[in-house]
Amino acid sequence: MDLGQILIIGGGIVALVVFIAILSFVPIGLWITAKTAGAGIAMMQLVAMRLRKVPPPLIVNSRINALKAGLNVTTNQLEAHYLARGHVDLVTVLQRYIPLCPRLSLNPQDSVPTPIVSPIAATDA
Image (cartoon, rainbow, N blue to C red; front, side, top):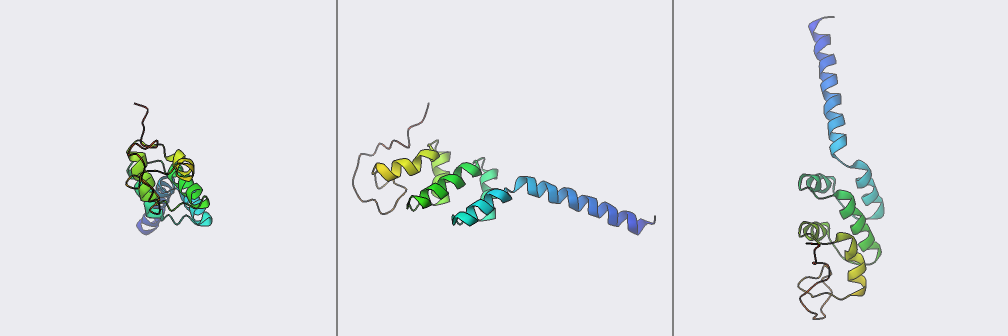
Protein backbone atom coordinates (compact mmCIF):
# COMPACT_ATOMS: atom_id res chain seq x y z
CA MET A 1 0.00 0.00 0.00
CA ASP A 2 1.25 3.40 -0.83
CA LEU A 3 0.71 6.62 1.11
CA GLY A 4 -2.32 7.71 -0.97
CA GLN A 5 -4.26 4.55 -0.16
CA ILE A 6 -3.45 4.84 3.54
CA LEU A 7 -4.67 8.45 3.57
CA ILE A 8 -7.91 7.51 1.79
CA ILE A 9 -8.62 4.63 4.20
CA GLY A 10 -7.71 6.78 7.21
CA GLY A 11 -9.93 9.63 5.97
CA GLY A 12 -12.80 7.21 5.42
CA ILE A 13 -12.47 5.88 8.96
CA VAL A 14 -12.37 9.40 10.42
CA ALA A 15 -15.42 10.40 8.35
CA LEU A 16 -17.29 7.29 9.54
CA VAL A 17 -16.49 8.04 13.20
CA VAL A 18 -17.62 11.68 12.79
CA PHE A 19 -20.82 10.56 11.04
CA ILE A 20 -21.65 8.09 13.84
CA ALA A 21 -20.94 10.78 16.47
CA ILE A 22 -23.32 13.20 14.71
CA LEU A 23 -26.03 10.55 14.46
CA SER A 24 -25.76 9.79 18.17
CA PHE A 25 -26.06 13.49 19.05
CA VAL A 26 -28.88 14.43 16.65
CA PRO A 27 -32.22 12.71 17.41
CA ILE A 28 -33.21 11.92 13.82
CA GLY A 29 -36.07 9.60 14.81
CA LEU A 30 -37.58 12.32 16.98
CA TRP A 31 -37.24 14.84 14.15
CA ILE A 32 -39.07 12.47 11.78
CA THR A 33 -41.82 12.02 14.40
CA ALA A 34 -42.20 15.79 14.73
CA LYS A 35 -42.28 16.32 10.96
CA THR A 36 -44.88 13.61 10.35
CA ALA A 37 -47.07 14.96 13.17
CA GLY A 38 -46.87 18.49 11.76
CA ALA A 39 -45.07 19.94 14.78
CA GLY A 40 -42.59 21.85 12.62
CA ILE A 41 -39.47 21.44 14.73
CA ALA A 42 -36.15 22.01 12.97
CA MET A 43 -33.21 19.66 13.37
CA MET A 44 -31.09 22.48 14.80
CA GLN A 45 -33.74 23.16 17.46
CA LEU A 46 -33.38 19.57 18.63
CA VAL A 47 -29.60 19.92 18.75
CA ALA A 48 -29.93 23.21 20.66
CA MET A 49 -32.25 21.50 23.16
CA ARG A 50 -29.60 18.88 23.82
CA LEU A 51 -26.97 21.59 24.32
CA ARG A 52 -29.25 23.38 26.81
CA LYS A 53 -29.88 20.10 28.69
CA VAL A 54 -33.57 20.13 27.78
CA PRO A 55 -34.95 16.65 26.99
CA PRO A 56 -36.06 16.82 23.34
CA PRO A 57 -38.57 13.92 23.60
CA LEU A 58 -40.48 15.69 26.37
CA ILE A 59 -40.70 18.96 24.41
CA VAL A 60 -41.54 17.32 21.08
CA ASN A 61 -44.23 15.05 22.54
CA SER A 62 -45.75 17.93 24.50
CA ARG A 63 -45.78 20.09 21.36
CA ILE A 64 -47.47 17.33 19.37
CA ASN A 65 -50.06 16.84 22.13
CA ALA A 66 -50.72 20.58 22.29
CA LEU A 67 -51.16 20.84 18.52
CA LYS A 68 -53.51 17.88 18.45
CA ALA A 69 -55.51 19.49 21.29
CA GLY A 70 -55.80 22.70 19.27
CA LEU A 71 -53.43 24.81 21.38
CA ASN A 72 -50.96 27.25 19.86
CA VAL A 73 -47.84 26.50 21.93
CA THR A 74 -44.36 26.99 20.50
CA THR A 75 -41.32 24.89 21.30
CA ASN A 76 -39.59 27.96 22.74
CA GLN A 77 -42.46 28.44 25.20
CA LEU A 78 -42.29 24.79 26.23
CA GLU A 79 -38.51 24.95 26.64
CA ALA A 80 -38.77 28.10 28.74
CA HIS A 81 -41.41 26.44 30.87
CA TYR A 82 -39.17 23.40 31.37
CA LEU A 83 -36.16 25.55 32.25
CA ALA A 84 -38.34 27.37 34.80
CA ARG A 85 -38.88 23.94 36.42
CA GLY A 86 -42.48 23.71 35.24
CA HIS A 87 -44.35 20.53 34.40
CA VAL A 88 -44.26 20.53 30.61
CA ASP A 89 -46.27 17.33 30.30
CA LEU A 90 -49.21 18.98 32.12
CA VAL A 91 -49.30 22.08 29.94
CA THR A 92 -51.72 20.59 27.43
CA VAL A 93 -54.08 19.28 30.09
CA LEU A 94 -54.08 22.44 32.19
CA GLN A 95 -54.29 24.82 29.23
CA ARG A 96 -57.27 22.93 27.89
CA TYR A 97 -59.32 22.90 31.09
CA ILE A 98 -58.05 25.73 33.29
CA PRO A 99 -57.88 29.28 31.91
CA LEU A 100 -54.55 30.72 32.96
CA CYS A 101 -53.45 34.29 33.48
CA PRO A 102 -52.91 35.94 30.09
CA ARG A 103 -49.45 37.07 31.19
CA LEU A 104 -48.44 33.50 32.05
CA SER A 105 -50.58 31.78 29.48
CA LEU A 106 -49.04 29.83 26.65
CA ASN A 107 -52.10 30.48 24.51
CA PRO A 108 -52.21 34.06 23.20
CA GLN A 109 -55.99 33.89 22.62
CA ASP A 110 -56.65 33.69 26.39
CA SER A 111 -57.96 37.02 27.58
CA VAL A 112 -59.82 35.97 30.73
CA PRO A 113 -58.20 37.64 33.77
CA THR A 114 -57.35 35.03 36.37
CA PRO A 115 -55.10 34.99 39.44
CA ILE A 116 -51.38 35.37 38.83
CA VAL A 117 -50.65 32.05 40.53
CA SER A 118 -50.38 29.40 37.88
CA PRO A 119 -50.70 25.69 38.71
CA ILE A 120 -48.05 24.97 36.06
CA ALA A 121 -45.45 27.19 37.70
CA ALA A 122 -45.57 25.24 40.98
CA THR A 123 -42.40 23.26 41.63
CA ASP A 124 -41.63 20.31 43.82
CA ALA A 125 -39.17 22.29 45.96
